[in-house]
Image (cartoon, rainbow, N blue to C red; front, top):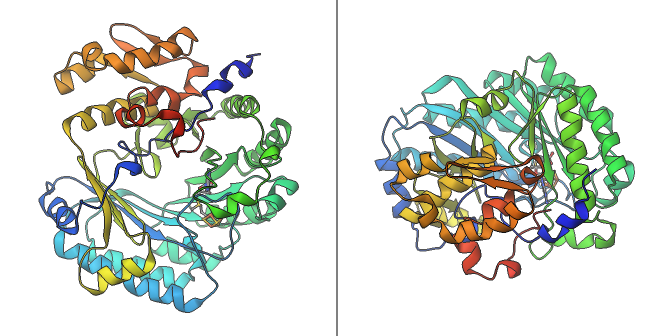
Amino acid sequence: MIDFKKFEKYSRPGPRYTSYPTALEFHENFSTDDLVAKLKNTDSTTPISLYVHLPFCRSACYFCGCNVLFTSKQEKKTRYLGYLKKELKLIANHIDTSRRVTQLHFGGGTPTFFSPSELGEVYDAIYEIFVNFDATAEISCEVDPRFFSVEHMEVMKKANLNRLSFGVQDLDEKVQKTVHRIQPFETTQNVVNIARDAGINSINIDLIYGLPHQTASSFATTLQQIIKLNPDRLAVFNYAHVPWLMKTQRKFDETTFAPPSTKLVILQDTIKFFETAGYRMVGMDHFAKPDDELFKAIDKGELHRNFQGYTTKGGAQLVGVGVTSIGDGDDYFVQNHKNLADYEKAIDSGVLPVFKGYQLNEDDKIRKYVIMELMSNFSLDKKAVEQKFDIKFDTYFSQAVKHLQEFVEAGLVSVDDSQIKTTATGSMLIRNIAMCFDIYFWDKAPDKQRFSKTI
Ligand SMILES: C[S@@+](CC[C@H](N)C(=O)[O-])C[C@H]1O[C@@H](n2cnc3c(N)ncnc32)[C@H](O)[C@@H]1O
Ligand code: SF4
């Protein structure tokens, strides 16, 4: 048994590194013209990955940290679809729409809060513009099992969706009541059956640990039930508690949260549970079966991290559509307006609804590579970094190597001339280890930062 109490000191605010630099560095000097230039000038052989944000939900799950708009008004949803279609047309003016598309992902909010026919309209609008989808393209959607029907599935099948991700979070009644999300096991079982009957053979389930009233034993019970559904992948997220950003999270009594040492026990038990069941841990919070692409990507060195978490489709230009959506190119990030009125205003005046963005400099590119390697593979080939960027690793990263020393001494990381590698326990603290290489983090009083805690 590991005494996780001694690692509680690492429970610090820190990024999840779905991007480097993090979204906190994005600024408003990155303009619509900058994005237009990026879309126009990207090499025509670079594949496109599309992300479409459908932000609406009926009611709030109190833990939610996503960009969501709560509504029960149909007019709002209809209006949004109109703007989404207009935005797609604006994008089409600036990008070569005959470029290969390797990924299309619908996220939210709750995309299936739209009716099947509304979703069908969105699919048609996309396929009218982007005409060159790879035969192996991943076409996926986030689904709240409480808002999903056979009719949704039919429309999705027609539009070639091949991956579905179901939000579950936790099955314990007391936890569900506290987080304001009542979702009996049977509801999830039913939608998983609908998806399987329709021939979807990539099913993901989202869970969260660290929610109020969860214990190691209650979460173990959730896992035992969930495994009966035989998911191909799971995302087991560390609850990101950011009450200064998310009002509904303020409803929680913080004394009902498990302490960091218990959260580490839960994570370790979860890893053991899924490994025993034949899954493999992928990155810091995913698990996949041996025949899943994410699993295979680890050995092939093809696992990448982006705004959607972990992906096998690296090297694509991520084009975001919809309010708050994020785009990600080789050397830039861009985010659409978060405020619906601003988003609509931009589109009404015929311009792409850019809110903020970021142009990476040379140092950012090196650190982005290092941090994403660590976050994906729990190891880093120092020689490969030296060759790729023409630097002397230990000299260039002398400050980072100093920060890393604490983790080396704690037996969480090994460092030699050629590589950096985390131990099994170190992998559970990968955010802390990656933070050593983040120049913005150290420049700005690390413990005062406004990120969720790493444990
Ligand atoms: C957009 S939601 C998924 C689709 C659908 N809205 C649902 O909830 O079923 C994306 C996922 O983010 C995760 N999530 C949301 N808020 C979170 C938080 N504060 N910390 C960690 N994970 C969170 C949940 O696991 C959720 O399933
Ligand atoms: S977790 Fe999903 S359903 Fe719940 S509020 Fe967030 S986006 Fe909506």
